[in-house]
Length: 218
Image 1 (cartoon, rainbow, N blue to C red):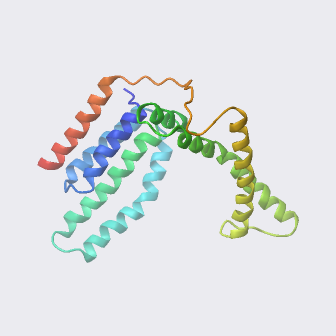
Image 2 (cartoon, rainbow, N blue to C red):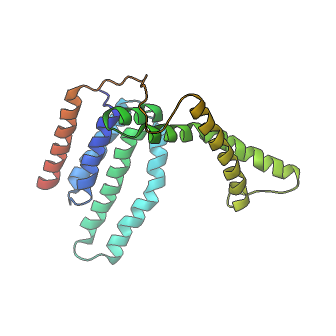
Image 3 (spheres, rainbow, N blue to C red):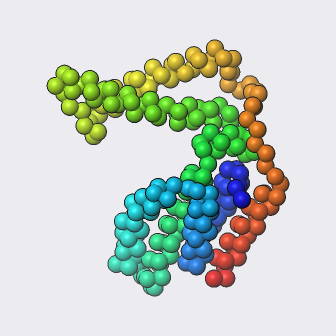
């Protein structure tokens, strides 16, 4: 069963906000397990899941150890709570980002959550420009090498040249949108269709309610 991106976002917010205040390790662990199961059943990239988890391990260990070393009261309880909360947020976020394309996500938000079309299309344009930006950075570094100059990733000159190229692309993009009749604030014809059954909203409410009950009584 695939949930609509808008429904997934509501579930994420409905669980994520109270999670910051609840004190239930069990509820956080259940969220991690269910989110991981959702990712597996929707064929999310397991290598990406493993890499994200591996990168977050030092952060989790550092967070847990800081509570053990400097906390008061039941420091182990607080350490496990913070670690489980971190991974719960992590897996919740991946249920949306790893199972949905950026275009589907943004257009779903426009249709069902009243996200500004201008903002959505602007973000979509930025995401579509990412490969071009990566290629431009390689061209800048290669051109510098031909002149005997080496640009490293931490040098501001590299990013300054990339920003100049991005400004030019932004100009071209604005002119292209204007030539296609785009005007900010005016209604647009949506060719993208995204059916959202009402039962998914009910399911989202039920999931949030179950989490709240788990966090209160476990």
